[in-house]
Image: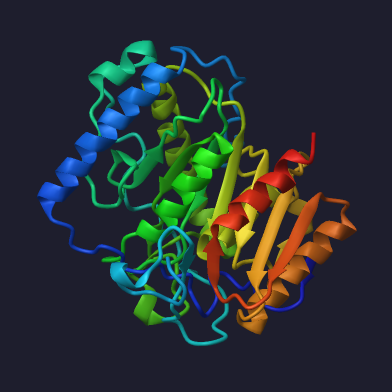
Length: 354
């Protein structure tokens, strides 16, 4: 039975558009960052045991396979504090991305071989040079970055961080900075995949933006391929690091938050907790609920669009009706943004459930 008090907010009118941070970085700087990232990875590997003995997280279901204010340039953001958005969609636009198919076309995933596996993978694998990965992040492929903090123990959990809608030339420096700091504080391996163009079509001006599927039709069409890419990437990272991951979590902002809600609510891939920031749900197909029911953290800013706040509150109400563990936070004075404390509060929500 559906809870349908209005259309799905999707990425919403504000779109979750990340600032175009550090757009156009020089190729020499990118190469230097990649080499530094590889050195950091090898250093992390030297600190960790060769084989992680944590239990591997579940595979996809068989059916599925920056700074305060909406910055549009790197210098405008205080990356370590907050990643925020600037609206490019029309206010009140329903849903984000209703293209048929949309996200399946682009590659990524496991297209580039890692040149080895098991405990020797780290010696034969080279990071991919891509400006999608900012300082401290390692390019697995053109669409996927990962971060290995020295604090990550044997069998560390893996945390997927999903960006909001991003213009083609935008770079996720602010959110990656926050996510890397959170990964270090929590002792997790962070993975930062890129969405696909064609999935945020509530306005023609954002059709080329990188987004996540946020409505029923786009989730059904695009999610299986996207999630298969996640699992391929996760398997490659495990081979590079020489082990497996203890638990799997997903944290999404704006468009990424709406998609994270589908992943967690419907069990599209097994997760042990999900976080939605600047997102919620208005249309919820309760008959598709996963029996696992991972704890869910939901957060919005008090200054967000009323429709975004309503979607967060509606999702929390439905979860309460079903006895689903969750936490709803409305941050006073904040707009459409994600901050470091969201990661900390999400983690507390997840680990509070045995």
